[in-house]
Length: 496
Image (cartoon, rainbow, N blue to C red; front, side):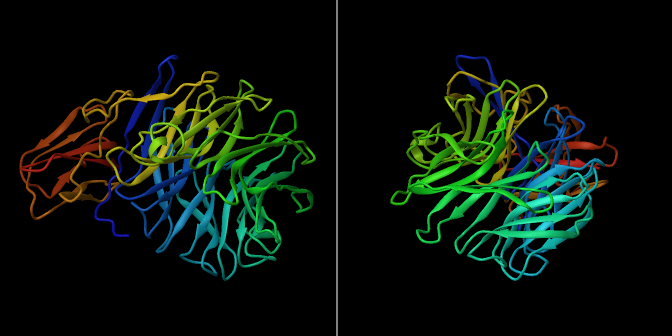
């Protein structure tokens, strides 16, 4: 993938509930190519750490994208982690020393097509060490937990080892990422561990998909095991359709919730799926239907401070894009008895938006991370949706995107309404100078440097190819380029 220029932009828009006065905000992070968001976690400073992948920054076709924001989702720093091919970050945790551990996969180094990739960083996201796991085929990590001894527990899938097409893969390492033990679970079909949690009794549990060897049909899968690899529960829940579990929750009462998707063998329709099992893994109950007609998937679930269950995913059946099959971020509220309370879909109905992980902050607000395709941007970015509504089923009314100079939280920054071929900037982040590459058919007549409040810090009225930013305060600067013919272009620059 060719990257013609590099810049970082953040835009947001607000959506409101007509009957409530609650507001949901969507923040996005990314560059001129695709970004993917997969995990978000609270940090010790009440901020958040996010991980996914970027094609806009870094060394290869895709790099791990690590983004740190404060408690108000204000950008603090980001890192692109990877090498010359592809790296993808699926999960992140903050370690006791304030650093971070990231898991995912890589095909830049290692042993095979893809290898499980484990990265340890300091508190600024700088890589301390990296480790590769796997064999000659595709091997991927999807989730990680910290262990009491300072090490790490990981789950994913291995196509290099085990009994079948893919086997669930459990890996235990020490604090330096050295392998202590690994285990492969599954049969001759496709068996994958998608999500991992630490349980209240000091063990671990994963959910995933387990394939029937005879029918080729997948079932939701629940496995519980110890820090020493002893399996205590290994159960699947076969039905007359394909089912997969992507998210798992241990409730305060000791039961477990699995969420994911189901699909009838003779249908292209994919519906959300949710089941409850007891502490022995025995099936208790589930939600039979969410009444979608296209593709609807649940990816994660949490138990809120108010006792309700909140699940996140994506839907092309409901919301602004439902009639056109365009995905929106799904947020569902469920009672302890699995009564569906409400399930709005956030989205502009123009480009796909998906949710992958949900958390709750100290104030009871919920945050969903995923991918967001803006109304003016054909590429996807990491999107973070913040909302708080507990009981009422309402649709969201999306406000129109505002021009750039309106910086209120109720409007979009509108940073993507630019001519992408007219110019580009580098380096970014920058210390002293920012270089501007100008297309031969374009002419810049004015350049403005602004802060995030829209205050003009400097103006230049010549066709410059370099701007000196050394005298401006460090932080985020906005460069606005005015052309003789094209519409103005706006770039966000990190001034170190």
